[in-house]
Image (tube, rainbow, N blue to C red; front, side, top):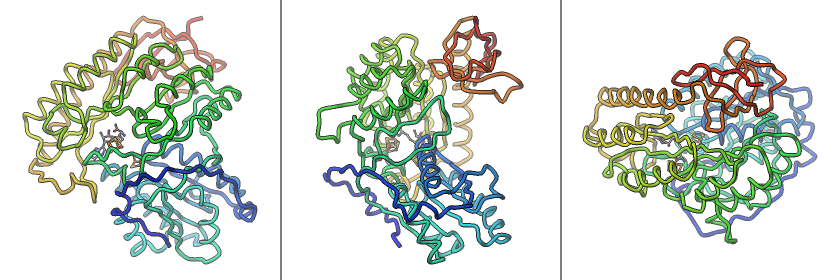
Length: 470
Ligand code: SAH
Ligand code: SF4
Ligand code: F3S
């Protein structure tokens, strides 16, 4: 048993990550014969992509996927720890799994992802959820075949969570959800330690993948006909800074663009590491999409300092301005936290001021949620929940107003849309513009998987309607 420790998770050493190539041990290849798995994924794209790896590992063990939890022999929850409500959802869902397990005691149940990295969560599972069979952390995914097999053989709870990151494991198999667009990890972990955030503890030290593995992966996707890749990291602009070679995010963006994959995206960009050479590359290559997610978090210098964000309002606005001027037609979205400990009415107004200046294409807004073990958890917080809810509401009204305004500029225009599949809306198709606007499209199914010209005929706050131009 390996239990997580927040103290160990906080430590950063200069130790360089080594690269190891994954290969499944033959003795695990038949463990899942005749069995089905169901996996439920919470959280960010990184977790979604981890689940794609987990699915492929399970299939190498001969498990088959099912969409129906009632039908499964193995149920896995890939969890997120970013805010309290993410936690609550998982514990709520666990109740359903327990109920199923009472009827079918042979079901194997497991928890992985960011909550599995949290000391308090794993202690609770060990003491109060003894029926959960396996718990494995974000650094232990490649070891799933062994963990699962050990749990079956010993018929006991198996917990393997490392709090110190190990080597970078390449060659982990992947079963992608889409055959049109793909997620690619370019780095793991985060060293920014924003004071409210749990991620540096649950994902460990920043480790960049070596460029050749990333480029090989993109080239392989190009061969398979993929239209889009999204380069993933908590702080992609810092890519490469931990590598021995002199190679940064702008080099990677250029080399990925040169593979000629039709669309390149990247998330998330911390404003701190966004440099001019990146901006230059983005504006030079047509297949790097004009879309940037640039989290603000707060517009108040005082709060930004307490958050440990390393920029102030002026720096942020200068960068924003430069992006708008240098990248034609760029759309910019953001993340904002309201109700950070001690946030005054004045601080909140500073945030609204930035929103009114930037007029974001869209924004994800959150109420501050204290995460156990982070510095902000211990900061004095005298703002009532009622007040925080009020601020969130005011902020959302303004965000929505600008989102609609931004969309209105598209009315009557013809824009490129990558058609991804059927829309939830009637018999329409759906896809995204180069600027990451969701469009419901009238057109023939034969266009699925293609980038087509779409005329925008109606706009709403969160989506647009369009028809394919022939
Ligand atoms: N690495 C990204 C953010 C990843 S988390 C970045 O730095 O931009 C996604 C968003 O969740 C954050 O941008 C932040 O707005 C929000 N978030 C993170 N921790 C939070 C917390 N404790 N309470 C509320 N929102 C939080
Ligand atoms: Fe969290 Fe900050 Fe790292 Fe983003 S940059 S993952 S908010 S610590
Ligand atoms: Fe959640 Fe972990 Fe992503 S905490 S947001 S799943 S990195």
